[in-house]
Image 1 (cartoon, rainbow, N blue to C red):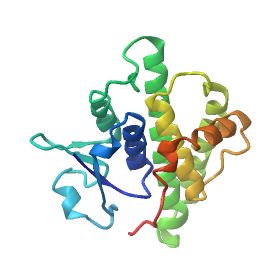
Image 2 (tube, rainbow, N blue to C red; image 1 turned 135 degrees about the vertical axis):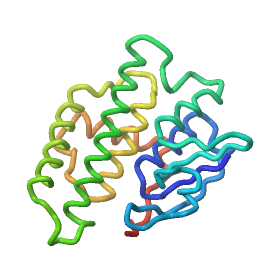
Image 3 (cartoon, rainbow, N blue to C red; image 1 turned 120 degrees about the vertical axis):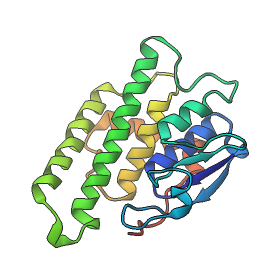
Length: 204
């Protein structure tokens, strides 16, 4: 299999961390692809009509895209404990955490457009404030909801990838929330995180 990747994407990194945790990383070729809404990558568009990574190319089968879908597929390929729990409250906690992490990443990406990426004359401060408020509210929620004794699951993987990206991009910090900060520091030491560092600048 081949993973169309981006070394500075929290969504792509989530998939690669998941692959490491599932023991599948050695069987996946990782190919960096720069993508941006303002700079089309035709090689990615050929595999994903949205022109975004991550995309998982599978021999003899259709490509898979969207990190949630790719992780769900990878979870069917290993013999260890499922990283997406199969049933019960554990499943819904994991999926809820994954959803929160994904939307947190999207809010951070949108905030970067309003503070860094969009030409200054086109930025809209009320929208910037709105996204910053989402981050603050989500950090507060996570600080009360993060579980320190749950078995590893996809929601934790997604959240760790996003929080590390927030620090990488110098976005509003979660560090004033002690439980969340402590949890992240512990997760960041996992071999899967150490093997997949973020790198590079956005190319618009």
